[in-house]
Image (tube, rainbow, N blue to C red; front, side, top):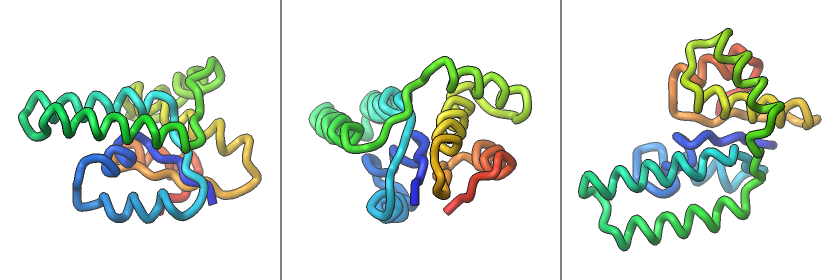
Length: 139
């Protein structure tokens, strides 16, 4: 099984949240895919937590290094003209933010290139609703 993880799901690997164990299990069971923008979104979340005093600089840096190692082990969909065009169409059909549309578009490009089921893993209600309407399974 292929699972597409948006940044809201992947971030739970680095910041302890109630869903972190579920994400760890899903990541270990099948092929994990994300979009290149997840790297910047997760770095942003870690930097914000540092500014808020939730993380020390040393912990933030350790988590960033871990995330960069993990990105090298994931299948990464690049933000290409094809992905961008899909995202623009999705923005016209669904109530999504641009970043979420890029994630869903990346997953759609992946789905179009795969003969097996692609699950969409996100922790954003509007994005999950759009993913369901676009034909994805959710875990």
